[in-house]
Length: 287
Image (tube, rainbow, N blue to C red; front, side):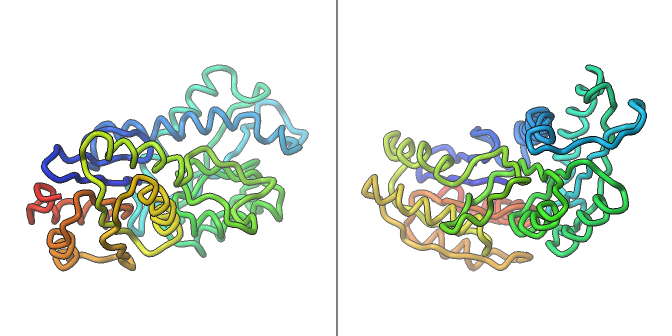
């Protein structure tokens, strides 16, 4: 997922949550970074099943260790699903090339959760109960993860989640004995970025625009604190329900607002569409 930053009279920078670099999505560096992230996360999780007391069935050492991957291969976030598949495949190739896990090869069973939470939970149950996987990987969205987490917890199956996310709430929701996170939360993204933009002359007035779900809202809530700490201003905070094809009205509002910086949290196809339309409109030369 990308957090895009546009600054007045400066070179436009799109800040990717996986790698902070200066190219627009979907860019070569991001296409490489996300698979690398999933590869690192998967390699780091090799000992996760042992840490939570999961044991392998008493079967031949030649039997593969099955891992279920419920990812979005349709429904709007298939770009991220395919990137995750590349990273996972790289990790599996490396692990199996080194002798596997306890001498057994890894096998990944991919399932399309269709960018839908209910489908994510269904795919998780199928993978655990029918396919007898040892652990789960995925999905991408927070809503999908929250749908899969109770299934994982109830069956004592580790769920490995490698996407940057909103963090746990005040009641601890988002945590679990069988839920493993491998990426950043909003304060880790915004704490270094917002002061840096101010110190380097990119500006202190913000327009915040994102999709209406928990990750962008928590991202912007955290950003409000950081912007206040530098004496900055938030000129507007606006959300879209998703699935929008015409961003012309919001692009005009951003252009007319006088904001110096656009803090942008719109994942998947919607984000790509917005950036293309904003570029055509000339917004990225104005903010």
